[in-house]
Structure formats: structure tokens, C-alpha cells
Picture 1 (tube, rainbow, N blue to C red):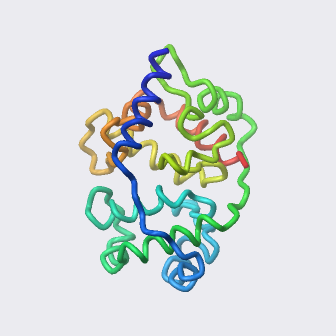
Picture 2 (cartoon, rainbow, N blue to C red):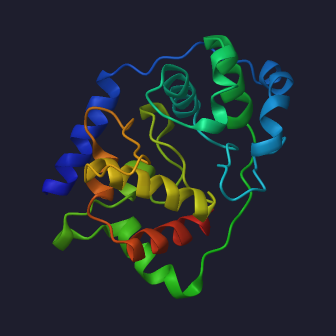
Picture 3 (tube, one colour):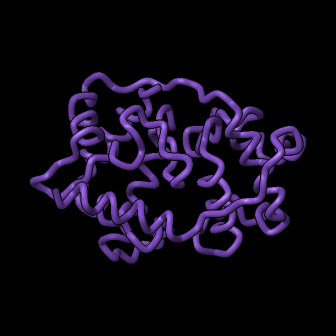
Length: 211
């Protein structure tokens, strides 16, 4: 029950934060997306495992990440030369374009599916790990209106890096690779802080194989 309560609190905090975006124009976003293509692919399906797929991602989440990168709330060195020139309308248009694209499928390591599925669908109550499905949906499609991102098919290398960055922030490590822009509920930091390297690897692989 405590795990469920934590998820509900996090969702409420996200909603109360009032994630608002300008109305995006997907066609305009397509025209503006050329600068994104080298790393994220022309249709948002990155061929480079370290760079996230953007195809099919909820608009509220994409806009928030761009806003956080622009404000410095999320540090992504590769984006430092791009986000300062983006207006709110640019962000909304790009988000609308990528949201309309179809994400490519990945593939899970069969040896990691059982543990990854267990963590994603049911969590690990003994270690205080909340089920990912509570916020990201049973099929990994996310909760776009609440700002919870879609994960299904995302590159496992990118997922591992983000989970470890949230874990570093949750454990208050000082290794320079922390990520803490998960809102006042600190849901990702709290969850990732309880994950081992093996857990993270299994989760990332399982999610990569979802579609």
C-alpha cells in the first residue's frame, strides 16, 4: 500500500505542478527538427544507443525536458548549444512532431527478461522498489497527460545511464553524473536509489524489448 501511495503522491505533485505547454504544430516541428536528426534520427528513432529515441514520446514530457535543459535544471552537455535558441513555441512544435512518430522496436536479452519484468510490473517490495508500471503504464507507453514518459523500446544504454544518474542523486553521490529533475516527489531518485547495477541492467533490457 505504501508503494501505491507513493505513486499517487508523485502523480498528484506532477499534476499540481501544472505542466503547461503551448499548442504544438507537428508540421512546423518537422521543419524545425533537422537540427535534432544527427543524434535522434529524422523521425525521432535514434540509431545511437546513448541518445534517446524521441518518437512517440508525450509532448508534456518532451517540453519539460527541453525547458529543464534550457534552465539548467537538467544537464545534458550535448544539448548546451541547441536549447538556448529554442522558444517555447519551438519546443511545443518539436514535441508535437516527435509525439506523432512511431517508435522503433528494440529487443530484450532473454536472460534478463524475468527479473526485468518482475521489477517493471511488480517492483520489489522487500527493497522498497516501486513498480515502474505504476507511472509508466503496463505496456511502457507512459501517462502523457501527467507528464510520465513513455519508455517502451527505448535504448537500454540510455535507460541505464538515466537510472544510474537518478540513483546517484537519490544516494547523494558526488560523481558529477546526477539527475534530479524528477519533481518534488523525487520518485525516480527514491526508486533508483534502491536498485543494484544488475537490477538496472535487467530493467533497461526488458524495457528496450517492450512495444
